[in-house]
Length: 453
Figure 1 (cartoon, rainbow, N blue to C red):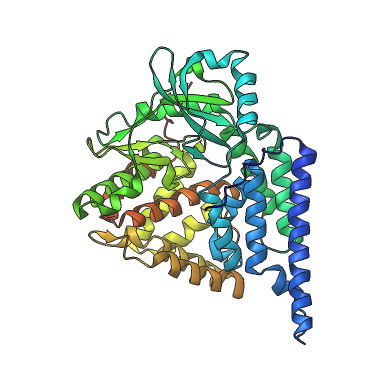
Figure 2: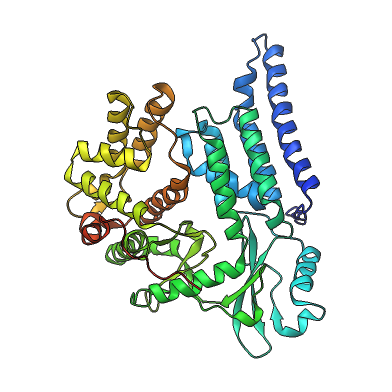
């Protein structure tokens, strides 16, 4: 007989309770390290507090604590894990990566309180059916399928209580925790990253803003027959609840069993969307989590979900990346170095050795752009090679600067998109896809596209 799972714990709402949760995380890390040290002493070995602090069990403890807190604390763990082993000890990168794919849902009583606060007394009368088992649960909220009394089949994205007002303190407290235990071994602009994370997370917690981006993206990709964006239903949407069409579709992962030609076509569609977002739209959904995409097998369309982490890019920012992309494709090291300084990956006064290191990493990371013909994402070991080179240059040789904070979410999109297409095992001619966008984007000062109202 299976042991029944314990009911989900409520999301901690007050700042005091969330601070206490992080305090427990810190205490757990210290206690775990002390226990490991006592075991070494019992075996007659010298205690190694640093090694014990960074042990795999401690990494799991931290991930579990952040997952229970949800909200910005969990989201920061996700963002840090995206940096991988270039920044984090390997066991911490692996443990925190779990935060990118799962979260504990709210218990029903807490869910009902949220619905009552947003919709008012008698909220149940709005729905002919409300499935209390969420179809998805993430760091900011969870999704429920409902049928309204007038027959609409909808998905309700419901935010965890207390998440929005705890963002600033959560980010500061997690940053303090990471610094306290020296979990970020290279020199990073923690304050800059924290400020950028706060700005982005405040946007993600504003479902009215996300609804506008959902509608805006529906317009932007209306000319892509292979893509579908759900419609927003404003009458059931609030600042903390977003209602949209429920679309019957499969997880994108189901394509792994599809014929190679279909996987290649979807991979090319996703890569082309990435370039359109950066160079044409100048507005990008920066969270390419596998769960944010679905696949309609009958129509062959890819469904785009979750536009909370959407941001605009200024023309100069886009022009910089167009120029460095063109330089990478041309193999022009001097131009790559010049644009890397312009972006902030290097500084004009840096030693030649440091500039060369930055150029080497740029050329390596952009391997798909430089490849002629179809690049086999599924067979590529590029992430491991970038990780090894980055670890050597950043940690052992101290030659790489921390990337500018304003690039963190673009990097998340670039890395996540690579992993997404690799997961499909797709082969894509990336070079041919990006080249048409580069000429039109290299001149700064273009008039930006209208922003969503």
